[in-house]
Image (cartoon, rainbow, N blue to C red; front, top):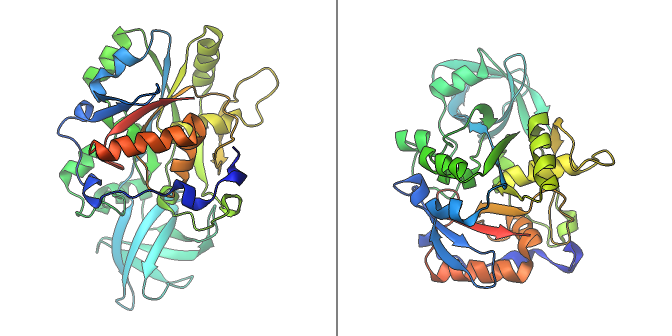
Length: 348
């Protein structure tokens, strides 16, 4: 069935609220892993992953680093302002979401954390609804010093030192995300070493996850939904590793939906004879049932929100009815859901 055969309600399900993970597992690789590749789901522990993959497979990670993108401040009038930096630009400038009782006007300033100021330059951004700000210093430095971890809206506690460490992958290197690539949060150094010892190779892409990943789909007709834009980069080395893996009969295993979106975006418009094209750009790819996958064979992913674009993506990869059955099993077996929750392994 194609996307036009489905409506938003087809991707809804009832999730008991107590299954929404508020904190990560004590150890990264001790999370549960639902092996959903066969007809019957199998309950496993994440550190068993090397046994489920084969020598010659290629694991592709998103190396983005979550920045402390949430800021609290006030306007000159004293009114409270909450900002979520969506994208860092050259020249001390950023695109940001702002929440205030009255939106600050262009030319006005906002003082954040009683430490630095930001001038409001106007509105715009990749999706049109963001505020263009110029900060009084280097954005990444100021955010690191004065910002807060941008925990998702369904995590109810204020960010603390544990979140600084755990809402970040162990290999994060390219700062710019405002949400973690959560499937990769389950990997620790011991697991990475075990994968390498088994002959499973790794490669990296960068996709700076935006706040739009939590944006609800409001259109019942999926074709009317406009995806948010995110910046990604697929380096030449990763393209070469994927080409070599495919040529040797190996599988491309995407760690997370953000990696998958970067890889399948890079495959759109690739030159004849190539699977995908290296380079950087923005993507607003919207993957729904009927999508023709060109790169990813296997996906490691956390459990997603009802009616979300990510529910549509995993249904496109593994099959709508199959995903419904896996989610029902996960709920019955009390898996932990969303960013700090458990993971599942599915294939095309």
